Each structure stands twice: as C-alpha cells, then as structure tokens.
Length: 394
Image 1 (cartoon, helix red, strand yellow):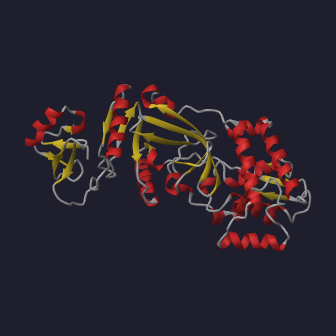
Image 2 (cartoon, rainbow, N blue to C red; image 1 turned 30 degrees about the horizontal axis):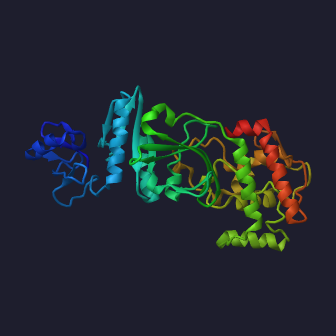
Image 3 (spheres, helix red, strand yellow; image 1 turned 30 degrees about the vertical axis):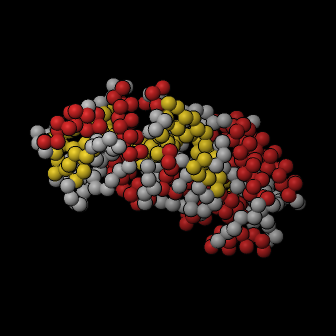
C-alpha cells in the first residue's frame, strides 16, 4: 500500500515525500487504514516507497502491487492535484470495505478511480461497481496499457472482464474505455465501441500525453467517423461471408438448422450481422441472434402482418446477460429494438405505433457470393448517407 495511518490519524503517502523524510519516519508507528494492524515501511533504490503488513492478515490491502500499478496511481494522483482537485489516494471507504486507487469529490459528485493492471474475475468487477453504486459514487475504470491488445488501426481486443468497465455517461451518448501508460505518462481515450465478433471491437481512439489534457477530456464526446465505421464493417461483412468459422453448441445447432433450409452465410441478407451498440450485453454472436429474429419471428409472416418488440425481446431473452452486470452503461434501448430500427431503415418492416411493427417486404436471399458482397456495400453506403442513422450513432 502507498498510504498508511499514523497514531494521530494523519494519512501518509511515502512516495510523495523526499527520501530523507521517508527515512526519518522509520521510527514512527503506522497502521493499515482498513484492518488497523501495524505496517512496515518498505523503500529502496529499486522500489517505490510503500507500506506492507508485518505478517499475513486477512485485509482488503493484502496482495502486492507491481511498480507499474503504483506508478499509475501516483501519476493520476499528481494529475488531479495539478488541476486543483481535492483528491485522495487509496482512500478507504469503510461502509463498503473498498479502497479505490483515487477518490475525489466535485460539488455533489463523488468519483472513484480504479486503475486496473491485471485481469480479475468478473464477479470482482461487479462487486466493486455495486459497492460504489450503493453510496452514489461514480466509478471510472482505467486499464493499464499492459492489457491493451491492438488488432488493427480500428480494432482492439477487449477481455471479457473489461466489457463491464465500458462507460457511457448519457443515453444516446458514445461508449468509453480508458488505458493508461505510466511509463510514457499517456492516456488512451477510446470511444464508439462496437463489438464485431467475440472480444474484437471497432473503436475510435486517441492517445494524449496526460499533462496536456485535463479531467474534461475524459468525458468529451467525439463524433462517430462514419466513413471509417462503414469501411471497417464492409471488411467485417466480407470476413463473415468468406471465412468459415468454427461454431459450437447452440450456435452450431442454429447454423445447421439454417443449412437444412439451404441458407448459408454466403447468401444471407445483408441486414444480418449488423453493428449494434449494445452487443456487449449479448452472450452470442451478432449474426446468431439477428438471424433468429429474422427467421423465427418475421420470415414466416405474411406481408402486412404485425408483431411486437416484446416478441423479439422474448425470443432472444436467453441469449442476453443480466443488464444489472453493466451499471456503467446507460442502456436506453434493448438490443432487439436497435436491430428492429435497422430493419425499419432498410424497409423490411415499419413501426406502426410504439413497439408494434408490420412486415413490409419478404425476406430475400442472394444468388451467389459476389452478389452478396455488392449488396453488403450498397447497404452500408445507405447507412453512411442516412442522416437519421448517423445521428443515432453519435
């Protein structure tokens, strides 16, 4: 731990003190802010000065942190200090027995910063988020760049536990994710996260030297680059059609049922496998649940037959995760509704009244792969120049 408590209740952060003062404090007694047991000063040429328990104890502060993590906390702490923010490092919140790396209050707003440099179980992420929510504290997760996995300029791999660290600060607003490199003192601000397949997501990202930005930059929304967005999804649609993917379990069973109807992914309609902002709450791939809505709910209906949004939600209910696992998202639209809105845009269905749709066209299929690829591009171009779609995506 970087911070410990003295007998008089003062909190001391060794790494912020001159070396001589750290040495002079070795004769003092310090206590763990959480369990109140004695702690020792650890310092040297190769380590950041810190405290450690004298013996193994059951404590929220137990478990060593690497230098990368310690540097990151100190860097963020100093960054907030330089902005005049009244900030605390390793502040222990007794009511929920949690200690965010950084804690501060601005007006009535309470914020906890978690700098996460190691993969942790999903249940731990959920537990911490729930704890903060109980006290009306806004958690902001910042990942270490040691967890950053770049695939291409526009694609990154996001580990499943980090899906629950994606932020959204307002309804209809973009999604955010953050990465910090303490060594280079730079932060990457990622926006407009759209999952393509598995843990691979399209993102827009910008890296900044930390000292050249302030707190407001963490929340500043950038418009979706619709040209890059369409270009990436054109490549993804091509990959989806050209390359045979190994499927397992229920997905394989569903794919086999389509094969029995002589439906292969090379000839499926272009309006299957389309980007959805809230795909991260789904347990299954985009194409799987979208094709289920299309073929199990819409395809067999006669033209002018109606159906409801609730029917679509019910159809994919088992393919979704519990939305309470995503307290950092402002999920204003069910993924089923997002998809139905896209089907409205391409003219397959029409919304008559709120949540009630009517089928307008029959589901058609392509004759061959070349025709399908041309159709994909034509559809995506339609989205590019569709003002309503662009505004919806911002």
